[in-house]
Length: 121
Image (tube, rainbow, N blue to C red; front, side, top):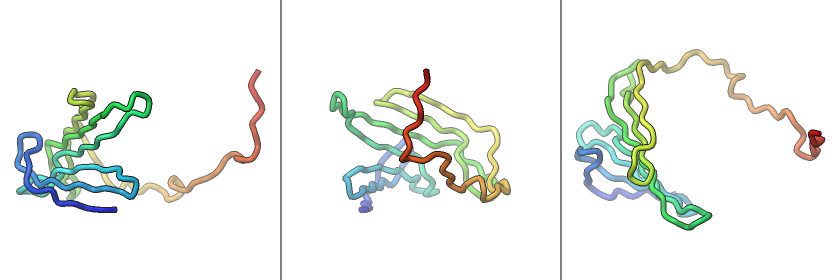
């Protein structure tokens, strides 16, 4: 994995610091952090569609930060696909550490991968 500081930038009309992260397969993501608060403003990644080999860009913008249980949390998240808004979420309440049992996170295999299931008629 490689981490690059790309320098100052502008993201969502705010001054930001741009950071890029690449893995060993050359897949990357670019993150933009607010220059003053150092909170994430934007996440961008570019990928090629395997069917038509066209380049696609996905972006996610974080805004409306408020402290929630001691953690600065974005209450507005907007997603863009190739420059057009595809999704927008406004959060009303956020909670952390809800005393979830560890059993909820245990991986359990409920099938035998070596047995082909019977076909439905």
